[in-house]
Length: 170
Image 1 (cartoon, rainbow, N blue to C red):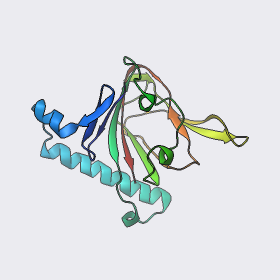
Image 2 (image 1 turned 180 degrees about the vertical axis):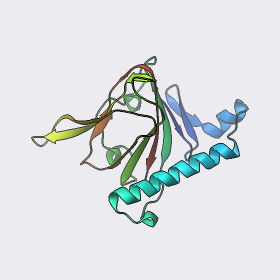
Image 3 (image 1 turned 45 degrees about the vertical axis):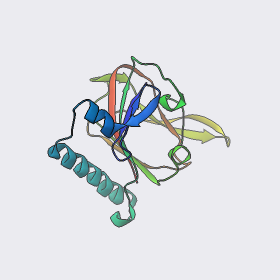
Image 4 (image 1 turned 30 degrees about the horizontal axis):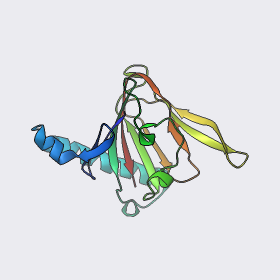
C-alpha cells in the first residue's frame, strides 16, 4: 500500500496499520540529522508563508496541524480504504481539524513515475461528482487549497514508479 510518514504524530504506515516511527527508527538504528530536521522545518514554514500570501490570511492565524510524506507506487495493492488514494474525498471530512491543505511535489510525473495526477473534482447536480482540473506533479510545485467541501479531490493511480509528496495542513 502507499506509505505515509507523519513526523508530528510520530507514525509510519506499515502493512495494514500505523506504527510508532521513533520505535521503528530506534529498532533500525536510524536517526534524522540536524540538517534534515532544519530543512523540514524550513519547508513547512515556507509553505505556511506561501499559504498566507495566496489566501490573504495573517500568518499568525495559520497553525501547523499535520504534515506527512506520502510514497505511492504501482507495485503494491491497497490493503484498506485509507490506502485507496484514488477515491474522491474532502480533507475536513477525512481529518476534520484544519482549513487549508498544501502539497509539495518531491518528484516529477513522467520522469519518476506515471499516473498520479491530482484531480480537483466538481459536484454537479447536487451530488454527482465529475473530474475538474488536473494538476500534473512536478518537482517543487506547490498546490494549495481550502480543505472543505468546495474542494473534493483525488489522486489518479500511479501506474509505474514512485510518486513522492509532502502534505502540510493548517
